[in-house]
Image (cartoon, rainbow, N blue to C red; front, side, top):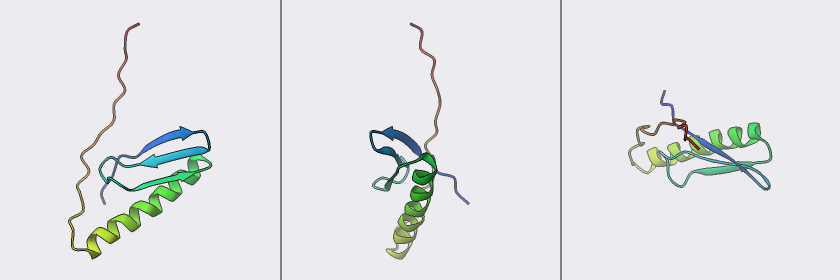
Amino acid sequence: MKKYLIVIEETGAGYAAYSPDLPGCVSSGHTRNEVERNLRAALALHLNDLREEGQSVPEPHTYSAYMELLP
């Protein structure tokens, strides 16, 4: 099982999400739970499409970190 970083952003209409490791695969939802559920389904379809087209599935390589900035 591979773990991909996902980024969730609050928007004026709810939430948007994407994975930097899988360009072009995005989703949205009214709630955070909904956007996570929608993105999970979108990622599964995206990876399945890559496999069916004979393309390699990208390895997860992005990570997240918080950085404190001094005033």
